[in-house]
Image 1: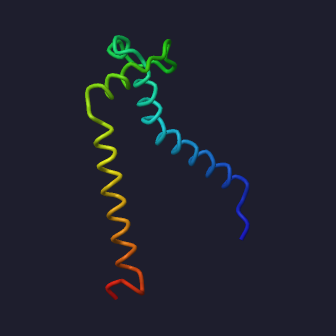
Image 2: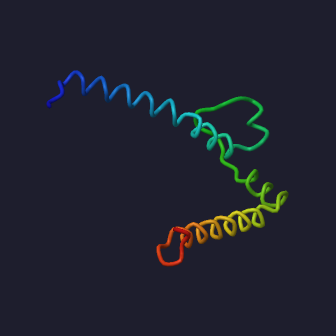
Image 3: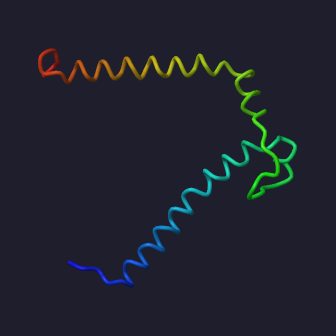
Amino acid sequence: MRTSRSYRIIRGVVLTALAAFSLFPLYTLITTSLEPSAKVVLGFQWVPSSISFQAYIDMWRTIDLLRYLLNSAFVSLVATAIAIIAESPEIGMR
């Protein structure tokens, strides 16, 4: 079944608009996180005038994030191993 040219154009426009609508919060999150803290309170800018990684440096110093990441990795690996063993036909519970 062939689709008409106008349908493909409209579909492309709608999908592009939905993608932009979905990606805008992610763009806002990234650009805001890279701005210095003093400029964030002044309001949103489409393109940051200066980029600073100080917020990320402060986060790594303030929170024991590496420990939390390692705990999450351990829990994920154990859960995956249990799922593989449980579903294995030779060892599993079937």
